[in-house]
Image (cartoon, rainbow, N blue to C red; front, side):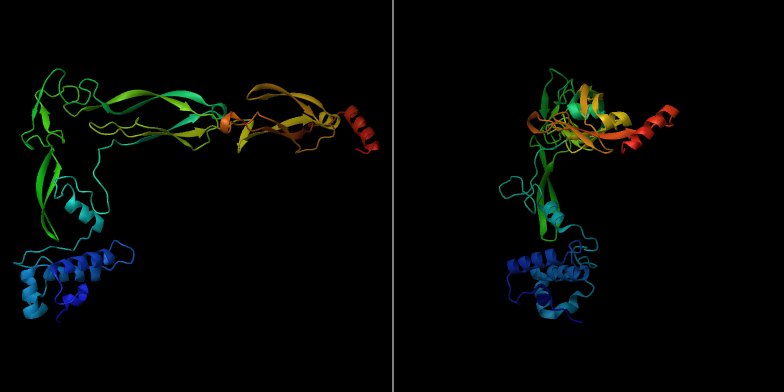
Length: 359
């Protein structure tokens, strides 16, 4: 059955090659199988139509004989140069791969979707450390030892032995880039890529650094100081910019330190307040008085109101977790009556007297 390739691309029979190309790009992007709502069958059909109409010679043959002369064409027919569309990647990646490193002015093409090739960046490092509850309240300083990629301390990233010279890279002739010819669905393109011999530097060392084998980086252990801010919460991460993996002629990655706050046997946190339970004798809760307690700030004397109830809360201002501008939350003390395990005969008599008084 004859196929109407003009209808498939939604163009008139007399459409220009530029209009055909624009129509193809729009439809291919719309029906790409990797997109939500994409249609693989439709996408193949669109590609087949463009491979015919996008080539002037094939288009003339199609206009004269119809699609019968292209039966079985899938972009890679026997004896017919073309393209195999059996494996679909992301359409944006197709365009970026096709145009990367290419421009009419000889500069770097920004890529499909506006992405551009910038400086290389080292990898990020993530690790976790445990801190005490008190450290999370007041903050602290920690030193950790990690092994990571660092700039070579002998050549300082130059890849050459100290006090030696460099020579022009003969592979790229000192440009740092090499030209590659690539085929695409739109034809053949020349693109520029980083020279693999000199890594884009345009020159190679006369005498390579023996410490890093001319890579400019080494693996080594480093001691890193970490400032833990007051008031940090469990699960939060501290970002240390530039303390990740190093890369020559690029930007180092970052170090992320995730904090795990160990539980305290007395205190726990609610917002910026610190909560604690305080067990008191029944007599102290009934008659009231003063009680010395141990807090994160040291010993503190608190006043117990007369006739306190189980679950009553006492609030001590400014003894909680640090907030903005150095202010702190509060210490909240929950009163818990401490019952004796057994009653002596004298205690029973006293309670009998209390009962007569209505207690």
